[in-house]
Image (cartoon, rainbow, N blue to C red; front, side):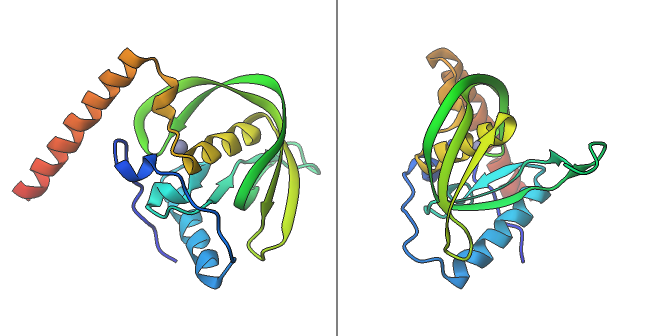
Length: 181
Ligand SMILES: [Zn+2]
């Protein structure tokens, strides 16, 4: 396993629409493992393949949940979804979202509170699950990535412009630093 580099806004790859995965091969499985490792290293709860430069419809996530047996305990809920598709959504929830590809940005976003999602698992089996609250928010956020939609798009035009300027300045400074070093 290896940790991968997470692309940052305004990298143009983050804007492309990702392609469905035709066959769940062993290279897809090992990519998912690397994505899990990257997500943990970056302290994220979800990661979509385009964020590491792979334009395919694969997302990984781990939204911690309360242990059904021992409510004092928080347990992992690792999930990899291939070609995810929301087949039902209901209710409204507002959540302050962050994104590994949009550093230093927190946006209050409107989402469906409950969803049902169809996908293939890492063995290529068709699955369907229900998700609510933060897990539902996370799935909707990651599917946005597969369609080239970013957290920054949830800002108004003026805020978007300011954020872009700030990121370009940071990217420029990092580049300058790289040439000095
Ligand atoms: Zn994100």
